[in-house]
Image (tube, rainbow, N blue to C red; front, top):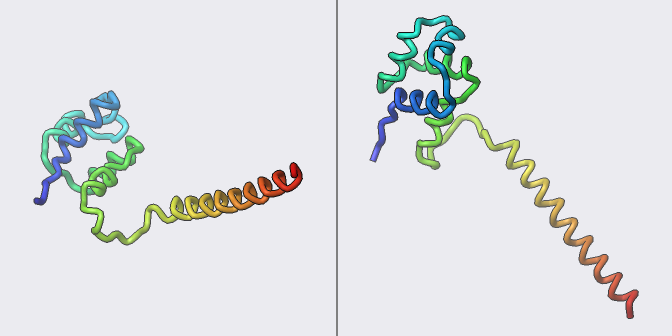
Amino acid sequence: MSTIINTGELLKTYFEVKRIRRAALARVMGRPLKSILYYEKKSDIKTSVLWELCMALHYNFFMDIAIQLPSEFACGTDIFKEKNHQIAALENEVAQLKREKEILMELIKSNNK
C-alpha cells in the first residue's frame, strides 16, 4: 500500500505547470543547468537540495510530499492551529449573530402586533 514518491516527477510537473525555466533556476541557485536537469530525472533527492529548491522557488515541496501521507500520521507541529482558531472564532461570531437576529425578529414581531 506504500507509494514511493518520485521527487523528479514532482519537480518536473511543477516546472512545467509553473513554466519554470531550468536555466534561470540554475542561475538563482548558483548551480549548473545539468544539476537541475539531473534532479528532475532522478526518483529521489537529498533533503538539503529539496530545501534549496523550495527556497529558490518560494514553494513548499515538503508539503506536497506530506499531504500524500495518511492523515493519521503524527506531526510535531499543528500547521492548522491558527486556521482552526480563526474558524472557532468565526463559528462563535455566527452563533452570536444568529441569537441577535432571533431577538430582533421577536422584537419586530412584538412591535407589529
